Length: 183
Image (cartoon, rainbow, N blue to C red):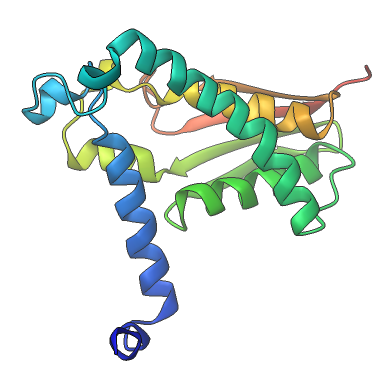
């Protein structure tokens, strides 16, 4: 019955709506910093477990999530990661699966040892703009650094990830470097 209605919505549209809803939910999760800007005194999660516990759990989720999800996606889709270029391709697939099709990466430099890319469109940034969350209250820099760094390290300890420029830091994009180190 409902399947007939869903079939009328093209898969690409369903995917875009789901991704946007997910990123909005995460932004609106209601932590101690963002919630007051949205008219919620303490948010939804922090009052239940406490803000410090929420921050601790959030950090672990990003670190552990990267450690698990990156290798899983690499194996599931047989993505070769022999160098920084392979790691970059894996990162694009992982982040698209996690955040949806709304993001855009622009390659600046690519060698087997080093990739520099700019995230010029980001679903998280878009949600922050939509909900008027001020830049000093966005926690994406630390979370992204932990998630990508731990995820790529789990694929190969020779891989490194570093955010070098961020929108939160005043740039019009987030720039990151992936490197393949010689042990």
